[in-house]
Length: 388
Image (tube, rainbow, N blue to C red; front, side):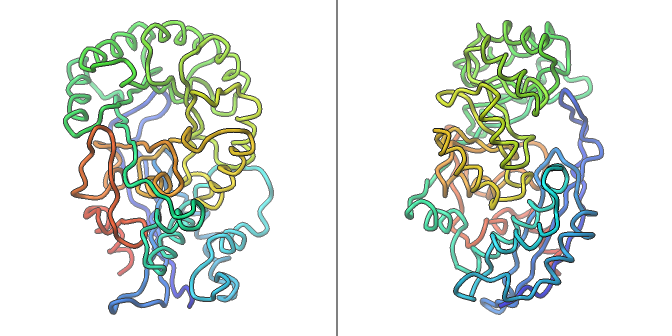
């Protein structure tokens, strides 16, 4: 078998929302279709991929470096030992050939797009949902039939008052989510506290609410928020400082006993390992949010999970950022602690299969081969147009 074509495009996911750092008015996503010569029911096996939200479409890097390398590689060098399917690890090595260590930014996003399409194709060729393929390869066949998910929202909108914030969170509860997350750090502390208290009024317990500062704070501000947040008993306090400021995170851990979460803006095994080594995270309570679609894909994520095991961390402490079906498959197949969800934004890329309801913050997966994009109608329409 062989790859016969690779097509990519850029799709806007612009929105008026903002967090403490950026707005999403110009946000874009790369979408990729990897066409193989394998045919089933008269149709070629095509793998699809896209990058997670929060980073712009890495189309230039894909087109200039990674896709040409993949197209130039001998077809047999991309196959597994059977010669009947693609090998994601060998493909990863091909596209990363002649790349220097370090510089894990947009490069890691581009590889993540391609890696997602490869795994989608591999699972389709194997005739299995990706989560079952992963469970068979790495977990003795065990998989989770449903996965914990929480609703991420609570962004800053123009003219959005406390009542509108409450209505937004009520809409997530009505959809079946019992855990929600909101943004902080884009307003003064006193205003953010009023926003938090408004949301808590509609929840049964404080641990139904997580808050996310998106890396906005210096140490003094992070500590001030920590002191103010501690009495609430929230689900977690997320990314208070710059993602690479491990000293800030470690000092904060000395003053904030509640759970904290971080990792969504770390894009490599090396950065993830330094986080575990130096950031003072507690493996009994803190949450790791590495997103495979932003960090060199599942091939790299498997290395990160292996590293975490070496440092005594359970995969259940991993709840990936991004709210997409790729991470949902990884969570179900590899036994992670859950997955983020974006019920109202970043469409059509956010969210899960149509017709599978969220119940008490758990969601199931479709039985389709591959990642299951075909079960998400609006997303698959975009992908199908690209495939032709």
